Length: 111
Length: 116
Image 1 (cartoon, rainbow over the protein chains, first blue to last red):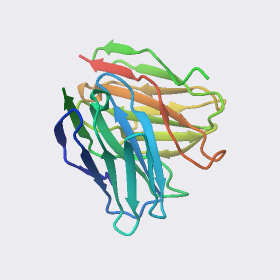
Image 2: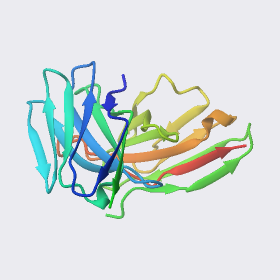
Image 3: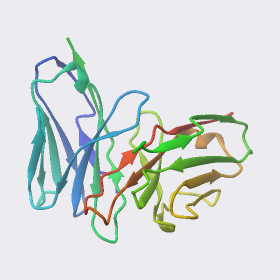
Image 4: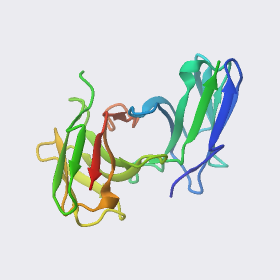
């Protein structure tokens, strides 16, 4: 079942922060985050495994709430290069190892 | 490491024709995935392989779709008797699952199919 992302779209000025949420109705083993720019393939950002960990690099970080089956992606002090569509991908665990992608969140950063 | 390669990048065909797409994964990756993406939507899972074994095929996939990975290296996705609803970007991805424990997918640039 496809995870649900919110918001569907967001417009920010350069330097502002954003939070993108991903929610699943099924128990999850991992949550992945990808960014896709127009006309390009999705590019891996980070993966979070069950255990409620939080990860980040530079000004992009993410958390995974295993009990709620929710993940959030945090973008701080956004840069123009952050523009694109963000997808979460969920994996339910061994024996069910395909990645199911969410509905996507389009992020537009304006100068 | 040359990344994931897909061919052709663009294909225009008439309804009813057969088309075949090829994917060359990263050489050390044992998992290979096919996804379909339409405008404004997330990638939709079609099927995946571990080495040459096809482990899962989406229930949404009609019998007109078939995929192979004969020697556990490159893969082909064939669509028979194409329909206009098949128009989409077909994405291939590979991962080193089982070797590193992390199922991180690397995507190819995709093959865009237009059915007239």
